[in-house]
Amino acid sequence: MCAFNDAIDFSKDMIELGVATLGRLVEIQFADLTTFLEQQSDAMHEVADVRDVAGLLALQREYRGAFWKQRGTALVATRDVLQDAAQSTAKSWTRWMSDGDSTATLSSATPVPKKIERSPPASERVPAARAAVALPEQSGKLPGKKRASRPKKRSGRNALDPTTPPQPSN
Image (cartoon, rainbow, N blue to C red; front, side, top):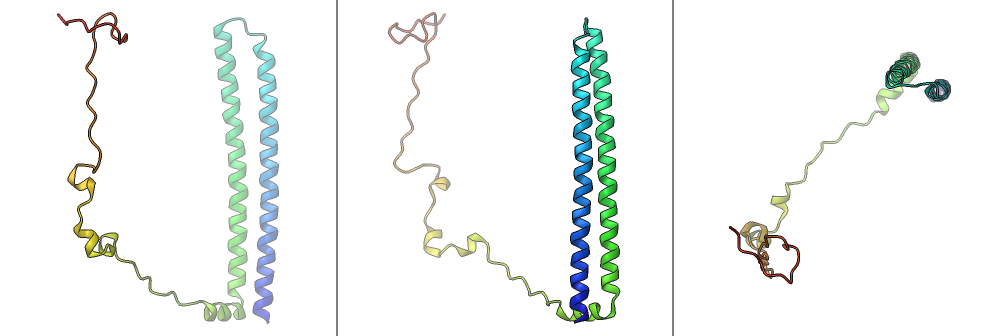
C-alpha cells in the first residue's frame, strides 16, 4: 500500500506543479500582451506627429527594436519557468523512484513489450487475379475516353470574336 500512496503523492505533486507552471506562464503572457498594447498605443500617438518619411522610418526602427526586445524578454522568462518545471519534475521522479517499495512495485508491474509484426506490403496483399489485369495507368490509355481535339488558334485583331474569319499570318 505504501507504493500506492507514493504514486498518489507523486501524481499530486505533478498536478500542483502543472497548475503553478501554467499560472506563471499566463502571468508572463498577460504582462507581455499589456506591454505590447502600451507600445502600440504609444506608437499610434507618435505617428500623428510624424511629418516626413525619415521620421516615419525612425519611428518604425524604434518600435521594431522595442517590440523584439520585449519578445526576447518574454521568451527568456517562459524558458526559465519551463526549465524550473522540468527540474522539479525530475526531482520528484527521482525521489519517487528512490523509494524502496516504489522501485520493486514499478519494475514488477512493467509489461514486457510484444514483438511487432508488420503486415506485408500492398503489392503482396493484392490477389493474383487482380495483379494480372493491367491497370489503365500502366497502359497509358484510359478506357472509354477519347482525347478532344484542340480548336485552331486565331490570330489578328479579332482573335476573340468567333464571327470573323481567321486572318492569314504574314
